[in-house]
Length: 53
Image (cartoon, rainbow, N blue to C red; front, side):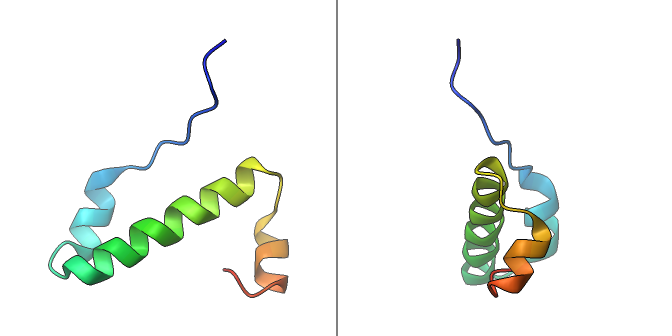
């Protein structure tokens, strides 16, 4: 069985933040951490409660 996989779509992030490389890196990190949290069962509501969304 293949490992779990999170797919991050590159073009929307580049379109929104590509002009600012530092901002692009921050947003990629934010998206990855957000999706990892979902993988472990943490809801958007809980992320808001703990100040991570």
